[in-house]
Length: 215
Image (cartoon, rainbow, N blue to C red; front, side, top):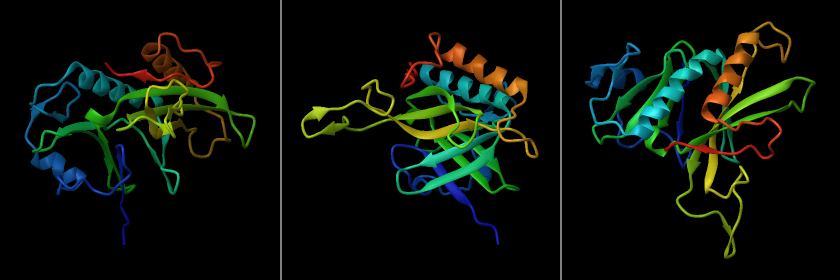
């Protein structure tokens, strides 16, 4: 018996979206759209500049190779190893735009609400369980209300007081069979290229790392 875990990058960690009754692959097959330059079906709806930037960024994640998706809502943690080679984009009948990763062989069914993806944050730090470096890309959402204690607005988890929160994290992952922390050089190069492209002032020593918001 296969067990499918559905993870949606959204303000709330929840199950399947109420407006989407299709499975990920079924939704891809049944929704109409034009052929995108990446060979996948895409929405025919007018795209905002912000969503175009988000799509471009998510496509570029394919250069990282294997990554570990980490979804932690403070109560439960879900992790899954994926690549972004086959990321594709769809739009529901309610005009909700998604980025999707589906792999039936690995029971992966992962979706990002593009309109709710507020920004990204790059983080490089020493591992807590060994001498290797860890390379993260955090996907950020925006809180509906300011993060407050009493009547005081407090800094968010990126320290920038921009009302963002980490919805999901992508951790660079070495290949199976390799010693822990032994990345392929091209993986680190790809991560650094992304960091310097999307954060033109990226500095690994900045603590906490700053949020880069999509515009």
